[in-house]
Image (cartoon, rainbow, N blue to C red):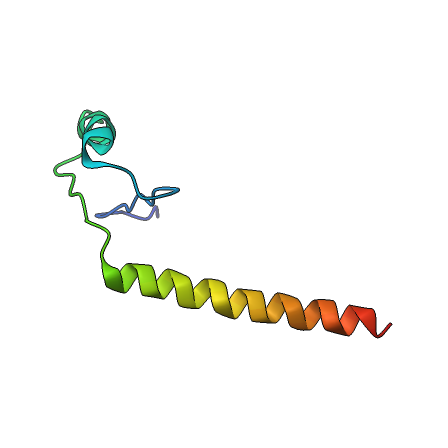
Length: 71
């Protein structure tokens, strides 16, 4: 039995301007079976979430580098 999907999410590589996104939205809308395409505006919460994730990753990488120096 095959899976049935009702929702697909597209993540952009970086924040883009609304006029640039318009072409992508139109292209996705033309795909067979697409009912609706919504754009989501990047906000301050998203900015801080990304900043925290980068900070945590940076700390982990520095820890790994420090452990490697001991070898």
